[in-house]
Image (cartoon, rainbow, N blue to C red; front, side, top):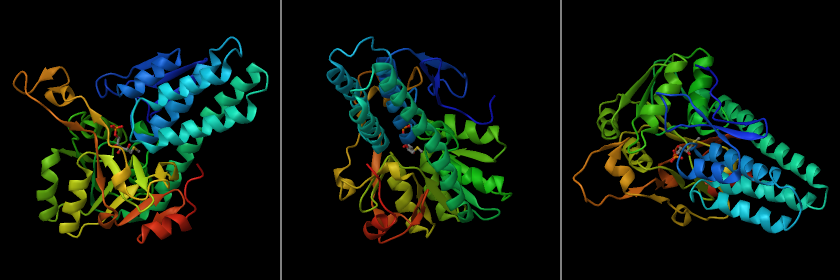
Length: 348
Ligand code: MRU
C-alpha cells in the first residue's frame, strides 16, 4: 500500500478519486469522466474532508469545462457546473473557496480560445491540490512542537492525508512530530456513523507505524478525567471570523470535556477553511444527512425497523474552548477575532 496516500488525482483527462467508503478493506479509485460523477463522489462521501472536498470541487469544474466541445452558452454552462458542485455539501468552507478560485480564472480568461481556457482551469485545479499539500506540511511544521515525548494525543474523525491533498492537517502535525523523532501515542475516536476515525485515521497511522488506539466516541471523557489524554488535535470544516469552529459531530463534546480536565485543545486548518464573511459559528450551515446513515453500520441495520434517526454531520465548538488554531502561517490564539485578522485572513 502506498505510504503517501493520494485521495485525488488529475489523470489522463479524468479525475481519479480514492473511494474512502471502501477503506480500509479495499483501495479503489473511481475514474470520473464528467463533473456529475465528481459531484456525486463528494455528495456520497467517496471523497470527504474539507480540503479534499475543495480540491475535488476545483477538479470537477475543470473537468466539466474540459469536456465542452464548443463555447456555445459557455458562461451559462460554467455556472451550471459550479452550482452542481456547490449543491453537494454545505459546511466545508474549502468547497466555496475553491469554486471562487475557479470562477476568478474563468472570468479573467473566458474570451480566450477554448483549449487555452481549459488548460488554465486544469492548471488552477492542480495548483489547488499542490498548494494544499505544501500548506499541510507548513501546518505540520508549525504544530509539531505541541507534541512532546510520551504524550497521548486524541484526534477525532479523519483530518489526514485522505481528507486533504495529502499529509493532512491534524494528522499532518502528528506526522511532522513523528518524522522529527518524537515518540508518542494517538487515540482515535471511531466517529459514528461514518467511522472516519476507525476506518481512515487508524488506517493512515498504522501504515506509517504511528501507534494508534481506537476508542468508541463515548470513551474520551473518562480517559481525559483519568489523565490518560494529554492533548487534543482536530481538523475543521469551517472557522468563523471569531474562531468558532465547525468540525465533525462530537468535536464540541470533546472540547468541553478537554476544558473540564485542563487539556489543551487545538484545531488544525488552512486559511482556506476560515470564512471571514461569518462573524460567528451560529451562521455556519450544518449539514443534515439522511437518518438512514445512522440506522446502518455499513449494510447492517442496527435499530428496529421504522425508527427515526437524526444525523447532523457537524457541530460548532465555540472559540473559548480552543487553545489555538494551527495554520500554515502559525498558531493563532485568543483573541481570535483580532488575531485572525493580524494573520491576514483568507484571500477569497
Ligand atoms: O463528513 P466529513 O468526513 O467530510 O468530515 C470531515 C471532518 O470533519 C474533518 O475533521 C474536517 O473536514 C477536516 S479535514 C482536514
